[in-house]
Amino acid sequence: MDLWFSEATSEGHKISLRVKETLYQGKSEFQEIAVLDTEDFGHVLVLDGLFQTTERDEYVYHELIAHVPLMAHPAPVRVLVVGGGDGGTVREVLRHPMVEAVTLCEIDGEVIAQSRKWLPGLACGLDDPRVTVKVADAIAYVKEQPAAYDVVIVDSSDPVGPGEGLFSAAFYSDVKRALKPGGVVCVQTESPFAMEDQLSRAYRYLYAVFPRVETFVGTIPTYPGHLWSWAFCSEGPGPFDRLREGDMAAVEAQTRYYNGDIHRGAFALPNYVKRMLAGLREQALAPSGR
Ligand code: SPD
Image (cartoon, rainbow, N blue to C red; front, side, top):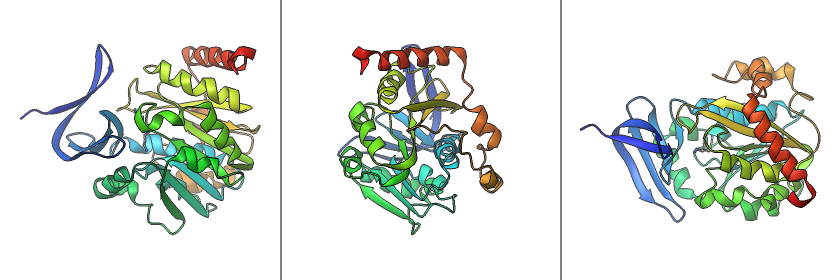
């Protein structure tokens, strides 16, 4: 039987993977969860019908979301990962020997359980002694963490269902408060090519909350638009100001995508993205946009 799973990017475009077997399908308290075994992309996690991660291309997303902020911080000791229940981001964070404690705050314990079972290559770091897994609503958790973290990584799903509240001014303000002095934040901000509405929602608030917001991009074959974006945010320092060049070779030896050239090059943006972001920054900073 010829079985395909498709995610619609728009009314007229879909991304499809041929499915060998459905490994898990269920409904948690928060969302529909599926894990598929696919012909070309290995095991694939799907939440509410949307691709979240695949064994074949996950490294691009997870290396970028983790190493860009961690390498741009002079001493990342305490790290918070919001969402990211598949464990891929935590796995990358643990590659930094300076990191002493990682908290993963994921609302849906079933995502963690299914990832441990079917995506062991991603979830492999979750039992590391430096990691604390909290199954909790990050919106409430972050509120209670003033000045607690050097780096906060928001590895959310899309702004629908449980991910929705993570794209809000109130949440980003609490994330800023959760930073230690000099801390940095990295937020997944959707596709500039295919998801301008979702991206706009994130940046309107990020620009209003953080004095420094810089965008970087990468190509994820299974995500809508393929071009994906992340925001690097801080109270001032930029992504290259404090780059730990001395630690780059040790990180590069362990990565498939990230390296020093990528760290710098990922912040080079196409004109349509620059213009989109300039408009959003202007709106956010206009007296009525705040
Ligand atoms: N539409 C896909 C958006 C997914 C962003 N988060 C992915 C989680 C991977 N750890």
